[in-house]
Amino acid sequence: MTTVSKQIQPDNTYLVRQELRYYDDETNCYELWTEQDATVTFAEDAEGDTPIATLDSLVMSEAANHPGVYFLVVNKPLLQPALTPYIGQTIYQIVTAGAFNDLRVVTPLVVTEPRYAQ
Image (spheres, helix red, strand yellow):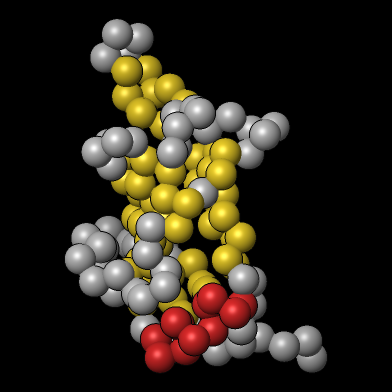
């Protein structure tokens, strides 16, 4: 099985964007998770047992024109000091939602050197 990962650069602003759906037994379909709380944590491990300092349980907002899509813009002043020690390593973006973290989406992120215009 191949794992696809995204890149994140500590010197750039990063957009966390995640569509959240849950399985509804009554309809036998996946439904959009709307008008609920969602958070994102960046961690050293996929389980989230080792969150990265200052990047833990950041509150996401639901996009006004896209129900079920949650987002958060993480700016350079927050990313740079937290992620610079992880350059060349894989960290994990963990989006959770629900009172008991009913929904959980884990995305591997490769922390890369900053990219500059050539």
